Length: 204
Image (cartoon, rainbow, N blue to C red; front, side, top):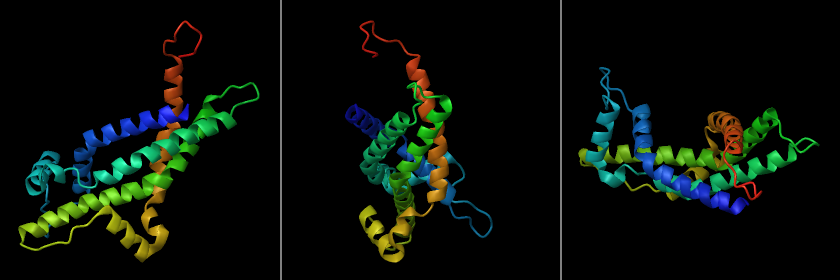
């Protein structure tokens, strides 16, 4: 049944985002850090970035942009799981089997479908994470920066660039998500089939 898969996937996604988001924020800050005229860096290491971000923005600052992920993680999982089931069903052979190569195609197509959600989700998340850094720096110098929300950022992107604006970086996202899904779904199905089953013939 698709509904339990969506619920389980959504809950797992929310828990996953909550656990690893500070690390993701630190990764983004390290990638986007500005280099000074003499080659000096804003952050000397991952730990240094974590400490400086926490001191400047507090605990909740470490989760800036996470609302976008938490809001969109369930539809992302829904699209990915539904698409994988759909393609696996329609790519079966006449004998009702699904060779590994067809499993990989089904997974890749599912990953291709999910970029409808993941591309704008990643774009907004990264921009929100970087906006926190800019606001913290402005605060240190006594400047006041208007509060930026994901909604206002989305509206601004749509006004300036249209629907294409929120799909910037689609090619890179596609390469990542399709490659991941090509590996993940066949591997999961194979390992799941090797697991123990109840003796009542239910297949569970």
